Image 1 (cartoon, rainbow, N blue to C red):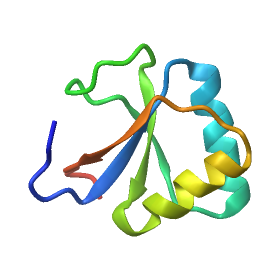
Image 2: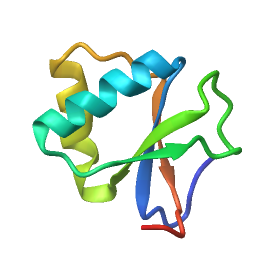
Image 3: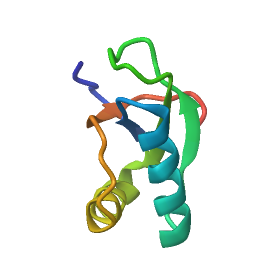
Amino acid sequence: MLMVDPNCFIILFDSTHQAMSAEAALKEAGIRHAVVNTPREFSVNCGISLRVAVEDRDAAVASLAGRGVIYARVEPYRSRWV
């Protein structure tokens, strides 16, 4: 799904374990994020995802990669809660 004007990114996971590992990694790195229900638009096996600000996307992905945290993908998203 292509968002015309995303105001955040959603990090999607295949398991709750992956999501919780990612949440801990982002918290440790001091990267602003929120644990959210996975939006219906995205088809993955896990019901929770992480939301990060547009400007924090690259730092979040780098932090997860640096800590060996596995995630399914990162998608642009337009959230009403940002």
